[in-house]
Image (cartoon, helix red, strand yellow):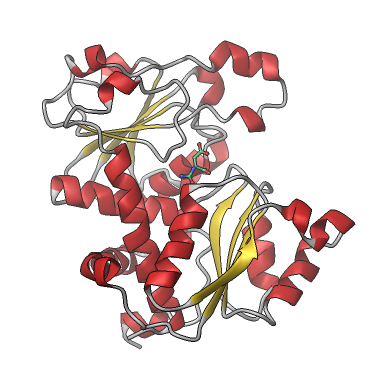
Length: 309
Ligand code: NCD
C-alpha cells in the first residue's frame, strides 16, 4: 500500500502512531496546500466535518473549520458542550454514535486524557484528536514541525528547548514524541514541579537525546528553537500552587540578547505572561506565523484522510 492510501479513513489520536516517513509525508502535503489555501478548492465537496469541542479553543477549531471550508467541504459541530445533549448527561460514546450519522470525520477536543481514543473506538468514521486532557495534541505537533521546517529548512541537527509547563501541557507531549523521530537535542526546561511525567519520559529512553533543566540560561546560547508554553492553570488541583508557578519564565527582548541571532521563538498560544509583547515585533518571534501552518497541516490531514485529490 502506498503511503497516501494508508491515511484513508485513518484516526489521528496520538503522535506515537506516526512514523517519520508518515510525518514527513504529511508535512510535504501541507506545503502543497499553501497555494490551495489562498485560492480554495473543491477537493472535499460534499464531505462534512464535525467539530466537537468540550474545552475552549480559538485556533485549533477555527483552523480546522477554515481548512475544511477551503477544501470545499462543510462543517457542523459545537464549541460549547453546554448547548448539546452533553448538558443532559449524554455520554461521549453516545454523542459520537450520534454525530457519525451526520458527518464523514470527527474532530474532538476534550478535557479527559483518553477521550480521543474512546471517541475513535466508538466511531465508525475517522476521528482526529484536537487535544485530549494534558496528554496529547498531535495536529499541533505537526504544525509545530511544519513551522520549524519553514523557518530553518530542516529539523535534523537542531537544538530545541521546550519551556514551561511540561507536566500538564499537551502540546509538548506530542511535540516531544514527534521530535523523537528526528536527530535533535531537546532541553526540557521547567520548574521541578512541572517536569515531564516520569513514565512518559521513560518510554522515550534511547529514542531522543534530552536534558532536563530548570534554568533557561543553561541552554539559551546554543538552542535554535525556543518553544514556550503557558502554565496550564485549569489543570492544577490547587490554584495556590499555580499562583506560585505562573510567572516561572518570562521571555523578553532582554532574553534574546543571550540567544543565537536566528533563534526562533514558538508558542502554541494562547499566551498569558510568558512572552512579553516587546518580543512580538522581533524577527525571532514565530508564534503568530506559526498559526498559519495550522491551516496547511489540517488541510493536508483532511484531504489525506478523506481522500481528496
Ligand atoms: C494549546 C492547547 O489547547 O493545548 N492551544 C492550542 O491548541 N494552540 C495550548 C494551551 O492551551 O496552552
